[in-house]
Length: 153
Length: 153
DNA sequence: CCAAAACTCTACTAAGTCAATAGGGATTAA
DNA sequence: TTAATCCCTATTGACTTAGTAGAGTTTTGG
Image (tube, rainbow over all chains, first blue to last red):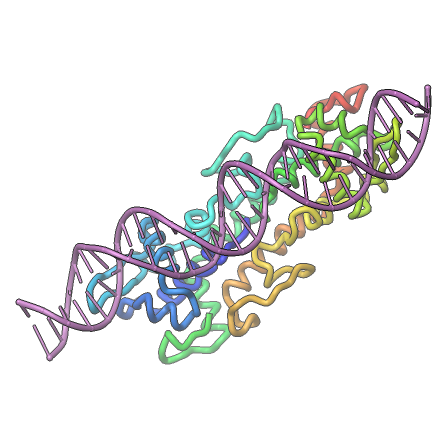
């Protein structure tokens, strides 16, 4: 599993939305300015997260984005899988992106058996970390701020 | 960490060499035939593994490759790092491939702190698995063979 | 009602990576 | 001296990544 810039931006954006969860929607421009993410690029990423169902949007002049459900129910695993693809280091050990590999018998493949362990370890972590927990970590690391947009992510 | 085809070939080749450790050198052609790896590509990969110091070669008509040290002392981590680069999902949490990321304060970055956990988990596994152990797994999964080249990897 | 500010959809592009392929050259045993 | 090896450098075609671009659609405030 490798986190691309796109994936990192997605997580940063979700953290901003998480910190603003019970408030109003947040504009793309705001996230873009605050996090130094190219606006048009962020646009694409948020559309993508919308198709995953993890954020929702309001259009028009008072528009913006918010989380579509409480941050406790958004796992990093789901987000990263959607943006980056498989968490597994090789797709022959992936559950949802499984692809047969070239070895003659997967059940007897030693490389595969190690990669499976790696996959389990990664999944175990990312499946159990939610956006809510990430927000908690942010607050813990930086102290509480009055305005959630003051957090630096 | 994502294992590319190149990295997979490297591991397969090392397994072949590991199973042949106390025997003679193995020719590129042999590995290529047995593992269905394009010969010229495998050539590059073995040269690369040689520069890492993990294999050595003999030239000329009786030439070939062998492990440069006992398979117990070749960790997957070292090999994959050399072939693929960082094991860490983002290079700001990598020990040997560290690169500063764009966030204003790494020590307060929540994303980083999660990615650090992921890195630890991956490293812990790959640092502790050696080529020798992989060879054992192969034998265990496939039963002992008289000719080590009969193993399917 | 209309203009401005937001989101939306589709396309394009420059740079980089990946998996080979290609063409020789250097070594060594028989 | 020949043939089978390994060795070195370069190129290529397909694909991915990180944006950029242009032209909508929706909504609110004046």
